[in-house]
Length: 170
View (cartoon, one colour):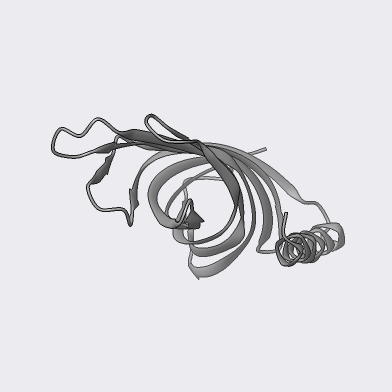
């Protein structure tokens, strides 16, 4: 792993962990969702994506660990090639209060991905991720969030994912 990426991971983890440690009682949550991903590569379409996640939050900040399957990208127009991308993601997240029961959120993190290509060599790496979204509280324990995530430089191409997720807080 490159030195700047490792330093960024340690900095983000320390920042969020210190906020969680100073909180009276961090909340634990888990969830999952479905989505659609798109790539900068021309001539490929996505067959669907999904994510599963768990995290701890306190006072508007959270640390979240996810498994993200960006799905299978197939060549359009009868091409034979396809590839899949999946991996683990670690995010630092911050909420922004908009109104009662409605929050915006932003995230920054790292995605450790594996790419399996049907016709070419497989690839793997660690990429930066950025995200923005809206979260709607549906009671004391459940929320729905919709968001956009950017996975930078996955095998020389950025991938964007739009997703709809359910979140349950314990």
